[in-house]
Length: 228
Image (cartoon, rainbow, N blue to C red; front, side, top):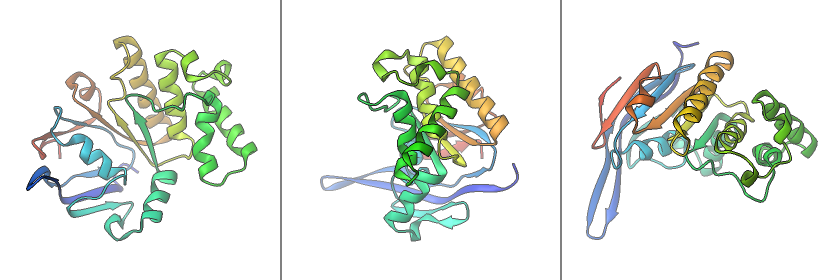
């Protein structure tokens, strides 16, 4: 499976207008990610790594260049088709977890399934199963403010996995965790990659985090420097 291409970019650029001038964020980025990889994209703040992640996650489109996801040229797809890819094929884990404070852990995890038209019973049953698998069986009815940072991160992981995606994009996933809890989170990612075959792309500025992945793509001033 590792030899099969999951995604590929060809000469991506991203330009943002700033008044009468333009600011170039990505400058000809070409990368390939294969199924089952466990890799990182590393770069300093402002390097373009988050912009690249947003394109890989079909949250944004490049100014020029081509992005293929599972063989499809995403530039030819409608907004609804891109939303379908985001919901069914890509899971997101954010630094701030992005949990809804007025929903329990169970309902936070079930929400993507409800958006995918699953029944409420199926969504809640599968959410409970996913949370139990991540040792949160006793926290199903807890709200985010009743959970520790590590527990909130695991809820976010469960939510990212609930639609059984082929790709997980993790944006600075340990940024709000202490070093011990962050190391535990990375070990969970590694185990899921190994056991489920889910491809992980971890976006980070931290070389120590990047060194724990199998491959690193470095972004400097919007260009890939190494790790192809």
